[in-house]
Image 1: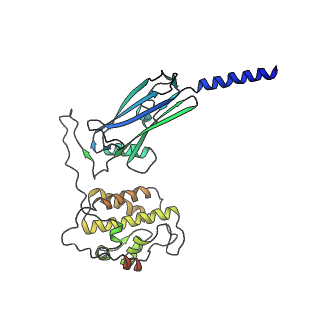
Image 2: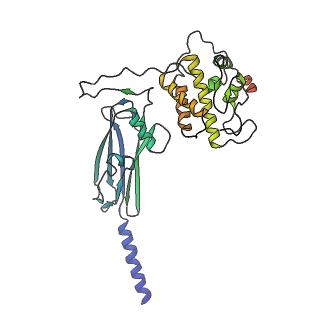
Image 3: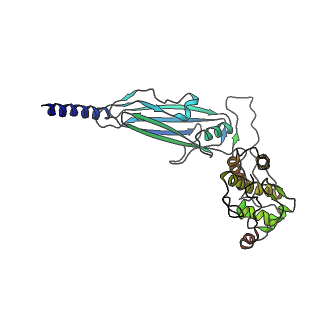
Length: 327
């Protein structure tokens, strides 16, 4: 008798648990740059003109075949600071086959505002993901949409709002001009020598004064010093920044540089020559790398002779100029 009572009680408990989990949702999340054509399927919209308005669109659907579904939590953490952390009030009950839509518009006044969003998701890139998270009893689902920001001073454009008659649009962004990256300079000894003919380059842990030293910085491994020792993470980051700074210096000397690249180079050189810390190394390396790549398709100035590529010889004379153990 006692055993039968326990079995009946267990059946009631299991039955209750099954009823509590009888919920199921799917969600859909899209982002569109207002006033522009919707991006092709699977392609993230790119924000290039400012001020811009992003239109976030949400759809939550009950897909349980027989019963009502109740969402206990619906959130979009990335947009919480803008007053839209909860696209739908909860608890939210939807009957069989029912769905609920919501929209939110966010105005970005400048490229800096877009870049701030890109940085807020914790990844070091020009994109951000806005994710809606839905939780119910014993279940959860998520849906995300990605947005990509333009690169300031390269492909961003400031325009006037249609309702502001006093706004004057600035001129179009300046083309980046010719530039070449580390892969070019590491095999074109003649171009690199012309750069160094205008003076040495002080890069903190390394002062590059000869062709061999410059090639050493371009050919050596960021993770290993010239004695075969393993560099610390900070040393490796400084090495990579020094490499991009050398390339950017040569781009400036040989081909000219736009304003943005020049500011980033100045900051990088100050950071490399200082010893106060390693904050910003990764950001500066990424920024200089972008600008070194920006003009790869542009022709070199007329009359400039880069010489032929000599990878085998260049690698054979390369000598890492960095001092092991020095920050």
